[in-house]
Length: 80
Image (cartoon, rainbow, N blue to C red; front, side, top):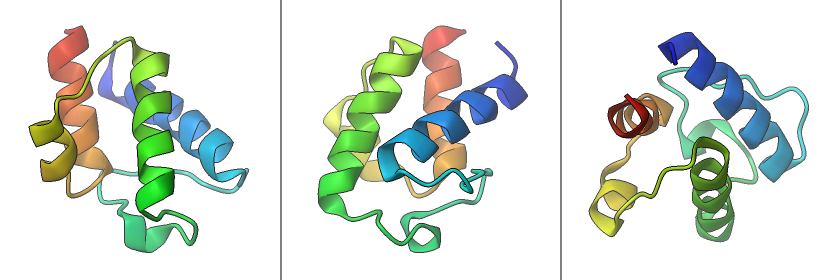
């Protein structure tokens, strides 16, 4: 899977989790960019991403993710 495809799929997951069809994630997207992205929604988001990509994040990865680009890096490393 190409990185662009990862971002396309992530955008769909983010739109679904946050119920906002206007969301288009990029490498630099952070929780500050999405109004409803709080700690509870972060858990829902991680679970949805894991399900979509058939990956499993460990606690260290979840805590270290600073933006969507880092999330995509971890996804790419697990599916590649």
